[in-house]
Image (cartoon, rainbow, N blue to C red):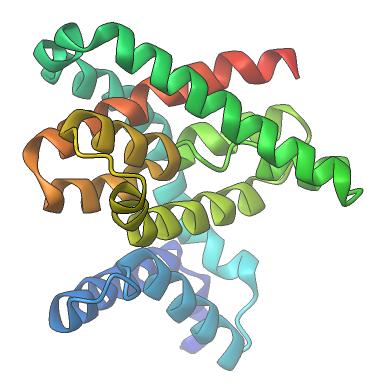
Amino acid sequence: MLDTLLSSPFFGLTLTAAAWCFGCWVQKKTGMLLCNPLLIAVALIIAVLSVFRIPYETYSAGGNFIHLMLGPVTAVLALNIYNQRAILREHFLPVLAGCLVGSLTSLASVLSLCKLFHVDEALAASLMPKSVTTAIAMGIAESHGGVAGIAAAAVMVAGITGAIFAPLFAKLFHITEPAAEGLAIGACSHALGTTRALEIGPVQGAMSSIAICVCGILTSILSLFL
């Protein structure tokens, strides 16, 4: 009976959905930024697979259904730019310049550190797109010989770090312009940071949302020359 249950694709799908709902519940109860639903869900899934000695291949039979949604989600980002077109039109040049500098800085910093510490090329390719949304990051990593799973983990770490510390850095460097603050958060910590930017203010949330899309496009283009 148990073997039949585990071999079903619905096992991985149900476990993923349950872990995510549990993570959302914990964050709502605690209100702590460190209790990020994605972080909790990943930790819970790893714990379940480890304790019950369930092979990853068994889980991925259903978990990969969610992976298939990354493509459509990436396409939906274009709708986000369209919905924010008024703000984008108003701040077009600053947005383009800020996202370009942010994307270049992210790529250059990762590659420089990887070269300094003599990191394997496959690992460097996996870490390179850490500051763009997961769907785009995994595609960039795989196209350069990297590992999609490591890229997704790097994206998660960058997102959680940005969501926690970005507002602190904004205060530290006296960034008081809402548009600039939102753009910076979205450029360095993508969707996870944007959830924090939305809590700070509507302009910050809108600009962070735009930065996700623009930085994703620019990073994809810039990575072709690396």
